[in-house]
Length: 54
Image 1 (cartoon, rainbow, N blue to C red):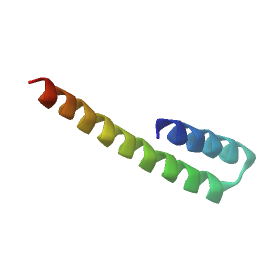
Image 2: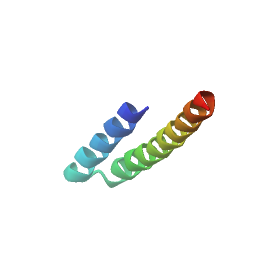
Image 3: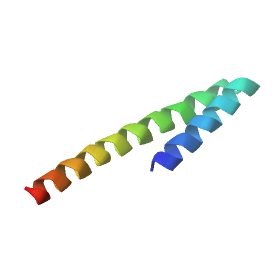
């Protein structure tokens, strides 16, 4: 999932550089959402691992 967040971030940067504002805004929004979903899943995974060891 982090891979897709990075891909959409790169697409947003390229689109912003070329002047496609709407595409850049949409890609940046998707990248931001995917990053936070990845972050939440990472924290849940860490907590599950700690609980399993205890």
